[in-house]
Image (cartoon, rainbow, N blue to C red):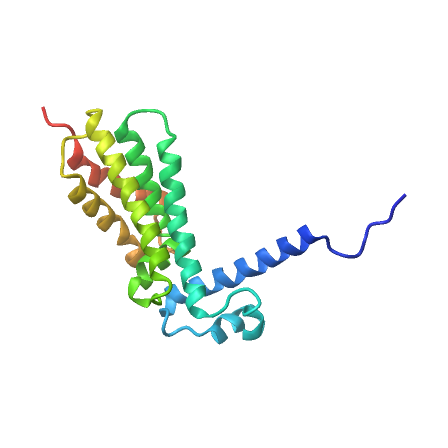
Length: 205
């Protein structure tokens, strides 16, 4: 019988590295959200994890990259929500509503909150193209779902661009006012907000 090797396999090493990188990002995003990007140093992040700043550099090059990765995670969560909503059965309004509810939830979670609270102005010029591309994909997904709901008659004909700005603008704000320790669950807040907002999309007789 072959004894178990005391050495980690390449897959185990990669999994460990990914877990440590994720821990750095999660510690950083919470500090960015609480203190602000400029008021947070990598020394602060390292201290919260009980490691040295040099250790962080094994996983991420600098604070700008940490911020970009945090924002990218939040934006990818929104893109995944859009993709999941598009696979839903039912009419266009149903798919739009599912996306909007998840959109609101993401913005009340760590990485989505960072997208809104930190803002584009904190990103380095090198990071802007990646941010803008992901943001454009999310905007396009929202507008497409609004248009599809108009086309199948499940919502009223509206200005698609203006409707997208209105819905996204309203659902971005919980990132700033939502209290994670508050009484209402994130899901309840999301459902209530989306119900209020989509009432204005009801088809007219």
